[in-house]
Amino acid sequence: MNRTLRLKLGLGALALTLGFISLAAAQEVTDLRGAVAPTDEVAPPPIYNEINDDKRRARNYPEQPPVIPHNIRDYPITLNANRCLTCHTREFTAESQAPMISITHFMDRDGQVLAGVTPRRFFCTQCHVTQADAPNLVDSTFMPIEQILQQEKGSGEQTP
Ligand code: HEC
Ligand code: HEC
Image (cartoon, rainbow, N blue to C red; front, side, top):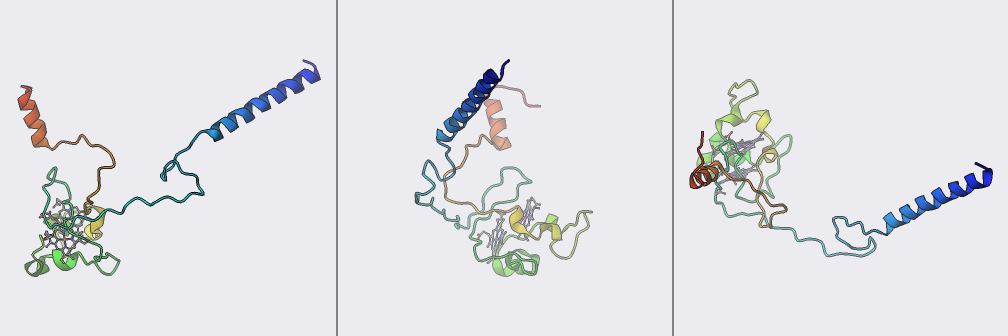
């Protein structure tokens, strides 16, 4: 290969790469804001309300942490204070009429039952969440076991 040919090939490859780069840049990349120019303002999505109807929801399986049927906006949980416990601990349920934290919330990791809530269960919102009156972000095909058994009975399948 002589020098001019090598130079020409090199330039050709460079032009091709630049072409690809500009092609990629020209494609619309949509982010969470939607197809809007970075310089444009968009109306923010609505902030949905927490469901606050005080109706306890059925659990989808026995081990599910029940969802919270009330507002928790003013119930902070910090290193030193836990507002949830002022209603949900054993000694306060008579006054608050809140369901007591269950026995598992008193057990340390060795199964030893403590006098108060175990540190493992101190940060309630790690497991318990409120619900929002928002449309689902994704579809779910989850079915509770009763529904699965019902379907199998309907289709004549044998259950073990
Ligand atoms: C002012 C008292 C009070 C406070 C504070 C409180 N709750 Fe409640 N909670 C209740 C009552 C009463 C219920 C029963 C349903 C209802 O009336 O909302 C309940 C229900 C629940 C349930 C549903 C239980 C079930 O079996 O379905 C969960 C979970 C729960 N609360 C978690 C929390 C968490 C987590 C916090 C703190 C972020 C908290 N609560 C703070 C009073 C309270
Ligand atoms: C590591 C996860 C986890 C944390 C943290 C946790 N919970 Fe739970 N909670 C559960 C699960 C799982 C259940 C259902 C099974 C059970 O009782 O263990 C439950 C059940 C409950 C129930 C229903 C009890 C009943 O007998 O119906 C209440 C009320 C509750 N939790 C409140 C709280 C509060 C208040 C806190 C914070 C002090 C808390 N939980 C922290 C997982 C958690």
